[in-house]
Figure 1 (cartoon, helix red, strand yellow):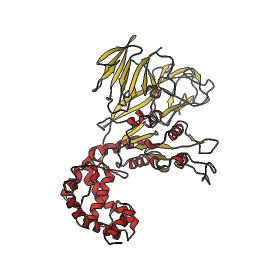
Figure 2 (cartoon, helix red, strand yellow):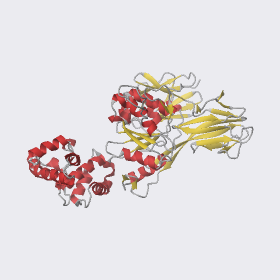
Figure 3 (cartoon, one colour):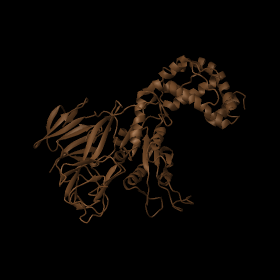
Figure 4 (tube, helix red, strand yellow):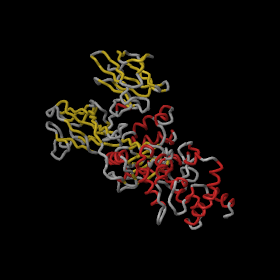
Length: 545
């Protein structure tokens, strides 16, 4: 029996990986055989190497590898040994057959053309499935799966033409929801996967053997590194940025968009994750279909499943008619689930099932219905922490984490601030928007921008009101005093100075907002970034009601 690494967290096994290769890598990088998302895990943290009947553990990390309580550089491993990599405990156990489909998450072959990017942001890890003939007339030949569907047989019209006793169209391999599935095409001699006849579509794992006539094939994985060439322009859809990190992001979006795989977008609040999702949709084969955004954090807990999966009439109190639900509304297009980390555990289970089966069951319905949708999810949460504390399902994470896009915060691309500022003012203020003097622009570039582009927009709109049609100067820039940013100009002023200088400015800002909005108080409050009730209080205070 081949020994296995058993990955445990919270005192219970989560998944197992068979040590069938000469070398098994574990780390944060996508090139690893097992990827752990924690920040303190090195890109390649350790590797286990097979030497005849021996297993060697080799440390490749910056933070060290601990075996049985002792830090090691290199050590022999035996059954029962435990590697500690908090929050994980990784034990060496005797092999007792194949890992179960439910737990062997990392045994699944990931066919995403783009798996993830390195920290430098200028490289892609391209991981593709490869069919190789290991026995038969065409022994040694191989085919790299680069299409959503590959037709295999002896007919010249097939994508991969095999010689020997093979049917004209023997089987098809399709990429579905980030996984490979094999479909038998009804050849008289049939198709076998690991010795079992294929009757229904079957998911393929790395290392599986497929028998078609007198030919035996195996499914392998090939990973290579590909450099991202930054886009030349400074725009992609509604995304804007001339910095190298943004132009690399634009090119990454194009690459991910072309693949029919789920996408996970990670980024802080205000970085533009929905704009990234929209760009993925617009540059994908589904661009002609609908783009349906759903904010999971804003869904009422008792209506989450109805909003996502739909309901039938009478399913619950208030269900006076049928509702299609977001998955069916996005049919033929893209469903964008923002703040996926806020999804309740019960909804996560149902969501996972939809990804696996391509079918939804509306609330109150007695049967499932098929859906054809690409899922793009996003979150600002630290998913490593969410996984460690059990608030987000590991199996769902691995299903979504096929095409990974990280959106850089504004502080990582300060050179884009002038371009963004000009665009935001022009787009938000009709006519002739105010200019920004050099000193004010320097202040803007030095901010940490905890709220990213959204915060920049708010600061600029308030400044445009305060400058009363003139040029925006440092005195017009009002930042969030609760952010504790010592570089904000207002932080250097005492409370008396702030009160004296802002009272008159506030009166003018309110009047300018009301004039610009034609006296509409709700619209004026929105422009000012305050609640309508707060605006009423200020109007009464200044005798402007």
